Image (cartoon, rainbow, N blue to C red; front, side, top):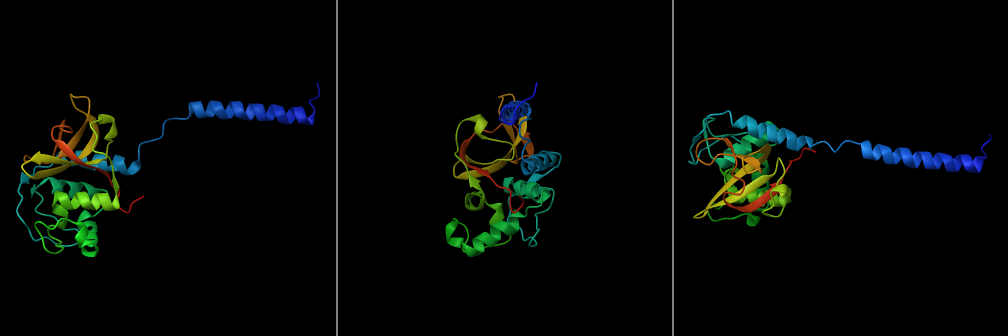
Length: 206
């Protein structure tokens, strides 16, 4: 049987549509974001370090400065996690504060300071809102993806910050890596306090 050119074209179109549909159905789900995957791995790695909770003001080098490795607070863990994937929040936060100081809370400092700019949760919240993606502080566990940053209100004016990871706790929710007083830990504490900030930030890395 000889197929005419018009019929052949129609047949080829039908085959292409069928094959395309089948290929779409067989395509795997999108792979996790590479940056977030690296950030989560860096966060989990931090849980193997012994760190005493020391909140004192410390003079540190700039850029790339850090308080002594065996000390620190919640923000210091976040800085270390981001540094492990090539993002220096000390430098990025300070530079943004130099150019936009009025956008940041001034309650405890009168000018940008490389020793402390990045070590205060309220400053980090403003920075992530300005330079990253600010997301709703919802009560839906599914809204918090691995690699997300959460800022928490512990009460009494005390703020806190941690990183969402891909391991689930007894609650069934993704856990967070944070230092709330006993060093970096991975704990089922995502909704233990009021969430006052929810962010995604990947620095200048794409």
